[in-house]
Image (cartoon, rainbow, N blue to C red; front, side):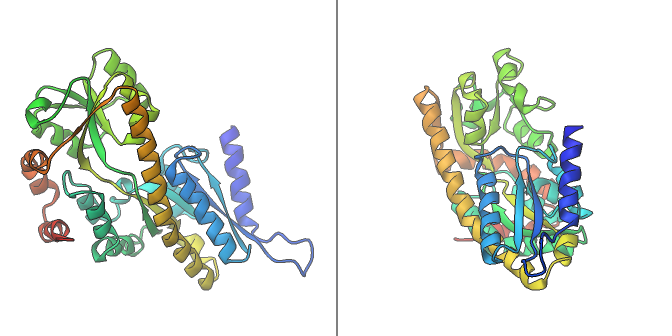
Length: 333
């Protein structure tokens, strides 16, 4: 009931863009941004920076109100649907659900695709990534891609050391409900386990239901999983970026000049978010290492061992995109 009341108040604010007590006062348009991550998370900080830049660049004519922690929509798919009908103006989401509208986005999520983070950003900020961003609006989904944000790399963490593919044999690894990821772990010799929520990973490891999971540094640290799975292997199997989206319907209701300002401000926040992400990763890593976590940094040769087993996934999920995959692999070489 409380959540519904908040949503009604937000929608009412969007429907009454002008707030002026006299004819000489400036009209102010308030737009809404939905964020599932908590206050202080790198993407949330970037949301607020986006709001600040837009308000500053429009001399206060456009204000963006950030609703973090899933206040409006606990699932990113709900926020996407709200964008499509113009109920909200912006949302920060993972690239994964957006791939439903732009299938090419599935390609940038293939396991062991990137050499490192720099390689990924060369792709995303180059012609390949920017074309995919443009395709979001061209897809007719009612969505507009504004900018990519960093979400780091996903890595395995387990109850025993993993330094090679052989060490993965038989391990039960908790995964998101993603068929490609399940196949990835199977090819590595392990068993992918789905259906366990992020808040239940700790107890599942503690009870021996699973032998570990996979995620980024901040989640590993903040969820406390490091206490029961103290071995973290930097295999960087996937790097799935976040995307700042806008509602096409809302943007069409604004002055075109303001839309250009919004788009430019969004692009400016990318570097800020990447910086905030790096700081958060560093602090999370330092904390868990101080608590006794053992970090395995794989050599390029060891990573190649993992990568070499992914051919069936590339054949299945990359079918029809072979040239694009090769172009991504060759970027920056």
